[in-house]
Length: 165
Image (cartoon, rainbow, N blue to C red):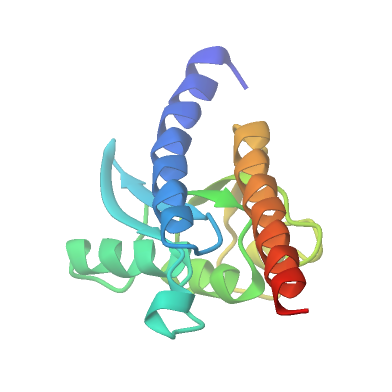
């Protein structure tokens, strides 16, 4: 990948990271996502399942819902989805159905990643749409955000457990 192309992805991923930080401020797992079409952000989202009591309120879902509303079409053809964490199977299924052209993600997810780490829903040969995948963009920053969040969360749970004893 040439430097100009990489810088372009880095810039968009930084926008997704800023959204992930919003999720973290709300004590949600820090994942952020944006949908870009023709150089414009047409959808954005950050994880909100805890505060909305909605298991489907993942960053990608919210960003794609906003993008579809913007386009006035449930298909988001010729778009790129930037997300700080490799999509899960639920989000990957939505991405395929929405006809997203390319997914660019930051951190790989060895537990639930559905863009190649555990499974590859985005490019499954039986499906009628294949998504281009670019993984590892600003991987260190995206991974660090998640690691710091879970480290803090474990420390908070340990402190609470200690106080209750």
